[in-house]
Amino acid sequence: MSETVYVVHCIDTEGPLHESTEATFDRLKSIFKLDLEPSSALLRRLQAGEVDLGGIESAVMKVVDPHLLAYNDTWDKVDAMLAECLSDEFRMKMRDSFGGGWVYNWFCVDHVDYDYNPRRRDMGYHNVFDHYRQLMRETGSTRDGLHFHYHPHPFSREAHRCATHWWANSDSLPQILSRRVIDRNWFPSAHRPGFHVIRPDSHWFLEQFIPFDFSSQAMVPTGDDTAQFGLKGGRFGDWRRAPVNWQPFHPAPDDYQVPGSCRRWVARCLNVGTRYRLMTEIDVRQAFREARDGKPVVLSFTNHDFRDMRPDIEGVLHLLGRVAAEFPDVPFRFAEALEAMRGAFGLPLPPPCELDLTLTAVGDSAHVLEVRSETPTFGPQPWLALKTAAGTYHYDNFDIEIPFHRWQYVFDEETFPLNALSAVGVAANNAAGTATVAVMDTATGTVTRRHWNGTSSASHQE
Image (cartoon, rainbow, N blue to C red; front, side, top):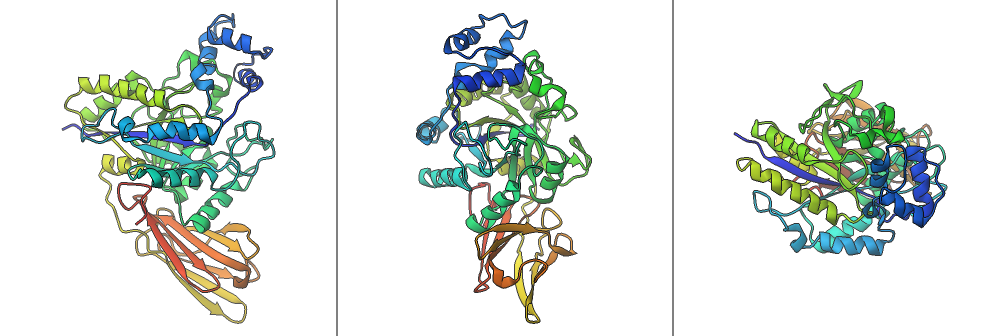
């Protein structure tokens, strides 16, 4: 019996982006080591393939494709695109095998802690996240997912540069997550990596906290891919050893690219509407063939909201229409990210982690926070976020009494006295990605608790 092909559109959700002609030529120099004099006239010739570049003309044409350079450089432009994308008419251009329309998964980044921002990104905590959460509410987009995307910081602290290490040059990662827990009572269950990069640091971090990881870009590279300097030797988006199929896998502890004994699920997620690692009809046909063979299939792909997503989606619909007609016995479903992972593997849906918080005074100046959960947490400890009365945010480890079930934390002169804090946040997923967030007001002891993703909709609050 055929399995269902779960079709998951993952958007690296970053808000507006500006790029000048000079910046485009800077990228060509970085990608191809081409030292060209910037001009609009030369750019048009490169787009037409009229400049002799020693055999890399087609690869350069892909980078400077007019569609790829037509950036949404203001929120007004982003929102104008989204107004159509989120409409019922657009979503229903093609119905899946179950009568459903297109589903979006917004993996939101925070642009923070940079010194230079030439691409005019929207800087600030929660800015992109809040914009999309509000838009989802206003449009009734209850099937869409709201997830996590993170950009590691380069040594230069320039917002348009790439990097691979998650905390070597900034503490923005714990700052973002701690603020999301305390300020928004929210914690991620699914992740897309900035610059498609996973390394041991991010691999082991995700293994502690986030169950679903749409990271793998395993594929046989094309000639246009290998012509790009930034992709050589696995510099960015290294998935050379990963399975080239559509079955999500548990990675190995010491190699995130190969199947092993880790807890989280890693899904293959190719690109659409960009310059490399593009999903083709061959890839889509592979997904349907694997589903016909009874394998669990999550067909996921990614693009950005700073470009017009409509041609990309229409291109995927065209591929799906052609391939689905060849496999009339194989159903496909447009899906939210967690819905797809749970459905493909028939994952059980355990109760949310309880995260019961108890605070006890010990002597005159110390307090002990005890946290318990009968339902095991995804990783050995929850996320612990602290907000001081002065408005600064911090995070720390728990003392682990029983891994996955019971923890404590001491507030005293070695950490923070309780009276120096205004809020304590504790957050964790269960194995199926249902997130629990508990935030304590330290002045009153009142705890606010919220659960997310307990149903098929990742944006749904229980």
